[in-house]
Amino acid sequence: MTKYKTHAQVQAEMMQNSEFKTALEEEMRKEHLQATLAEWRKIAGLTSAQVAKAMGVNASTVSRMENNVTKSSIETIVRYAKACGIEHPTLSF
Image 1: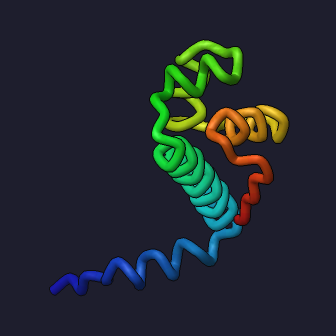
Image 2: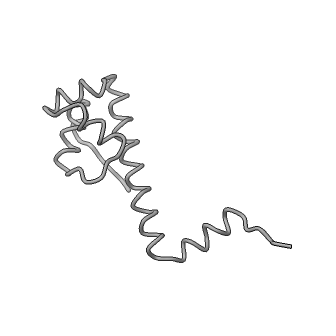
Image 3: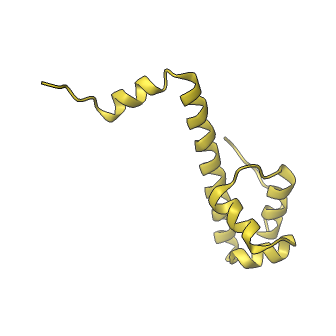
């Protein structure tokens, strides 16, 4: 009879692999940043189009930042924050 592993057991085993652990941590940081950007916009009561206009970029740029952030510069994130009325943005990872 095959013994099945729990999710926690599989995850613990996978976390022993340094490449997997690094990739997972990177993905978690991206998801946290995306959630932070969406929260800033929600608090400001703005649409993504309004944020894009305030930043001077296309709406697709804002959409990409909120849904699939990959390599946004610190300056771009600060511009996004200021467009949402956040003068001194703080990010923690």
